[in-house]
Amino acid sequence: MKNKLYTFFLFVALTLVYSACSDDSLDPLQVNNIKKGRLLALRGTALTNVYSKGIPASEFFPRIATAADKISFEAEYLSDDPKSLQSVDFYVLKKVGATTDRVLIVNVPFSSFVNDGKYKNPWVSVTMNLADVLTKLGLPNTFPLDNTTINTLLSTYKFGINIEGDLNFTDGSKGLAANVVAAGLFQSDQFYPAQKLIYAVTDFCAYDVNAWAGTYEANEIYSNGVYGPYNVTVTKDATVANRFNIANFYDSGYTAYIEFSPSTSAGPSTQTVKFPDQTSGGKALTKSSGAYDQCLGTIKLNLDFDGGAWIYSLKKK
Image: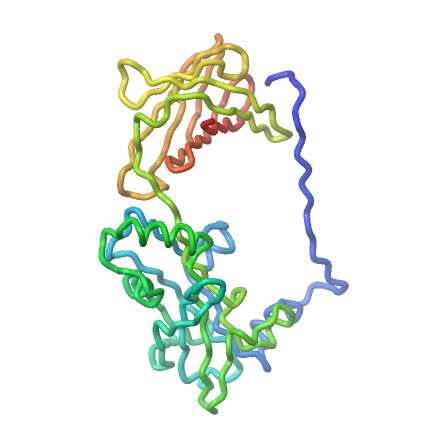
């Protein structure tokens, strides 16, 4: 492992401490003991994405969007009286200048909910087609999207398209998303989590082999700190397709090479790059994997080199 001075990270853990013994009744959502609250709780893959994987519940890529794109999620109705729900109104939040308008996209009646044992309470699967979402936002929904629509989505909605729901109850009352507060979640009528579900808008640029040569800022990211930044030069290999040679690898004058997997239409998850197993500076370089972002001109590579595993981060200057 490189014997140089590192800039250390300091991670601060924010911990919630409860001054009581373990007790199911201390569950912040009181799922098993709901009396006051009536919740529409996110479930399924969308919940796993948000809370377990730390990725959007759903996303789309305006530059390669198609009529098949959609947002789907499951929601469970939590209440001591499951039959108290009449329907749910889902809205998209349309941005108009500095203001936001709620535009109804779909009403889901309670008759669409099922109670088949998948979840403890009645639940429903909801799907909204991207074409319908765009229409509600006042944007063209002809695919492929035109450049004006793409630019609007990537700027005005760069943090995602927000979706929220109002609960309509059989007694004529409503549980409005606007009335939900962060405290005492289990005592509120709400679309959980956090009142809004985000349909992420993610930029995607198709692979361009001619865009990667140049000077890059390099950082070496280790478990205990970072070495860098320093400059490296990336040049296109004259014989092997999609191979690029890195000069001053490891900030030691070494040379190494990487190979890109071209991606043109399948989304960012297919934009992969790696160091094929090789020798650099007389040392074995192995076990590499990584990803690139064509739009941002960034590369992040996992590798095992000079005694351990670390991450090599490159950003084009």
